[in-house]
Image (cartoon, rainbow, N blue to C red; front, side):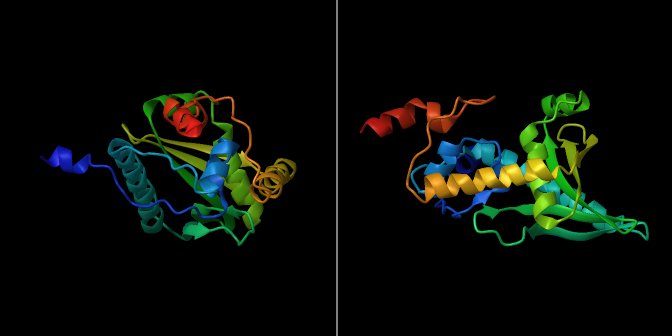
Length: 213
């Protein structure tokens, strides 16, 4: 009985923000275009939503620990803070920490055993690093860190993200070009190549059938 209740689809209506979320950097441009136009909504199963909630719990725990463990040496400056207003870009930083007077952006990632193993071996998704890089650029805080938290064993791995002005400006330009040349002109981008994990928006049989109607 409880299982059936919890596994019912969430019918909450999706409302496009109208901006490009930093958390979606590196994802399919066509998918983002269709989402912004209200033409595509990613379907999340109840199981996936529970995974997201577990991630939120880890984020909240890390923030709580940073607050409680603050000292003269370091303290939490801000948590869940929106980026400065930008015409095309939105985003929210998990935490900003002050260490000996120097500000550091902390982006928390709850991670599976597979991801933890990859990060331990020096394999970090470029999109993760680009998220922190954009935060660094838009906030003018040029120190940032990815903090991976293992979901099964609670292991912590820090990955510093070096500020690269040229790459950051290139990422911003790419987003602005996307809005100017596609979104504002109502020109749908081509299908992506599927990426590392596949693209449900571009390669789903369900979506292909809907397009043919």
